[in-house]
Length: 634
Image (cartoon, rainbow, N blue to C red; front, side):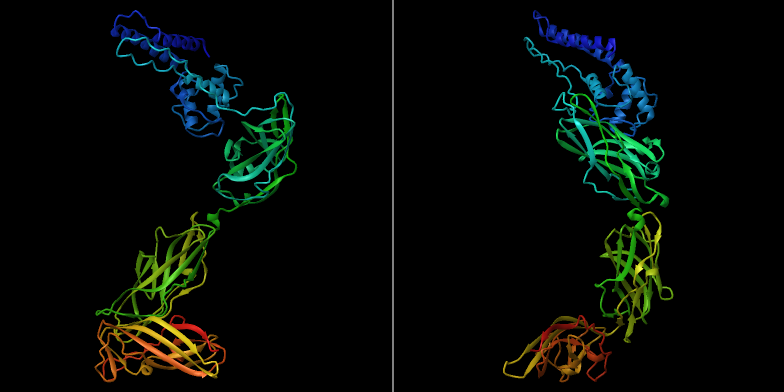
């Protein structure tokens, strides 16, 4: 500390004592207050003088770690302010980055203030010195409202120096050794752009006494490890980062010998114990393919690569036996893939009945499944083809309930271009629903079928490069479009097998319940169930099928039954039909189920009036959906 600073500190302390040594013979409060004001003025003047000698406000920053070339942060900015205000660092303003200029300025500051070694490394000694400059005397007590003898002030506390490890075996020489730690394992796979990834671990052992490890050197036989692959290296004790060093700090020692040293830390290895230290790395955001691949047996801790000081003050050295490997691969973004498929939730064959204008709006036809693997993928374009006979005006693209885009058809092709913010996250599947808008529907049944080929999906990886979509063409079921028809929905379909144990035959019975809604006009259904509803018995293996007898279970609800031959369902009304089946045959121990539309026969036959004007038979119901469970004819 300079002479002026020492003198200022002494006078400042005396001034503080003066606050509590006021003339006991003061005759009034005003006399006491005047004396206090005079002493405070002296304190302020001394504080200003101290600041002019290097006692910067920045020195009051609470430094908690060592700083060296490559360090970044608010603490680096605070240190730079000290150096700038002291005239040691000639920059306009703090940058927050500890570079060569900061190192040189710090070395000059250390030399000027008697800190040895003046090496430009900001360690415990420099932190303690700055902390001592920041220690100000306590604020004088508020003058009492009535004359009284001030209490004796407590002695200002000395700022504590950050704790550093110390040996518990003073005077004892230790025996140091090292080996590779079990974790992380050898040959980790690292990817371009990753950060804080485990590279290797070193286990340092100490016998006979404690040892303080203060240096560790990493050797590589390949220069590109430091110049092309890793941007920086950090040494960790568990989750605590001890020091981080930029890869540019490496030194060429000899042919195929490039070394990087961690220093400026102190880690205690207890007597007859060990300490595992981990080297973590940050990889460059872009690594040329020439420098990706396997790096076999390129890393090691060389001779005397580990230095520690034991309780006797003797330097002890160690190295690891053998080498370590690693590999560098493309980033997950670069490896991303995308596949296309029709999702299982895609709508089964169905009937779309138009409104009175012949239009069908937002009819769900196809659900696409887009799956990304290894990385995130952005979908930018999607081409949809219509192969049905109906006039499809436009198609809408939905993500769940959110409409992403809408586009029209030109020559049966619709293209969604420049889709924004349509991403498929890594290892996730995005479901997209295609809904059509159809015009010109008539009483004649027409079809709607959509498909999306893998070549119709344009996508790119996170790095902006395009990728080839794999998978298979996603094709919808064939859906029907008309302006006039009954719309049928399944409520339940059950099956049962009964047989008396003494009899050779049994009965397979079923129960079908459906809702029928008249759309576009009144709908008439024959009162003879077997003339309108066709149900079949099918072996679970699908080897054979037989049409079984059907009949109504009572009068359907919601119908006009006044006509002798037909049940009438008024336009836009819904009726519920309960249909029963029976089939008696010799038991064979085989499994059967009931389904609709057997052997291409219509499922529902309906009429437009009571004179027998037939509507188009409904024979397109999916037998995987419109079926019962399975029973065994035992």
